[in-house]
Length: 97
Image (cartoon, rainbow, N blue to C red):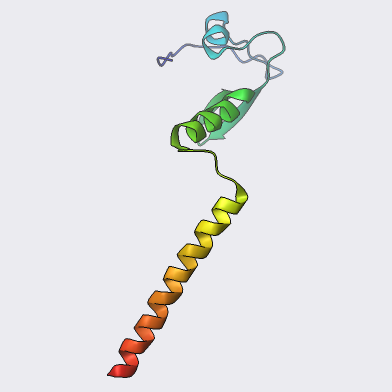
């Protein structure tokens, strides 16, 4: 979404109205909920489902293939064996000096 800047009135009780164009651009319909983030003197609104769908998209983008827990543990054991071999090899080099 392109950056939009507009003036919005804050009522005495703190209520604001998001213009229809903003709600439409953000995909907010009916009783939608948003996450309000305050950073320094700025406010950011994020649709509740947006973070989840973004994380899922990132995972799909970077996940090469489905892996089981057993696959993961097998890989970790192999990496640990390599690491232990490097440590043992380093100890032999120091003892030879």
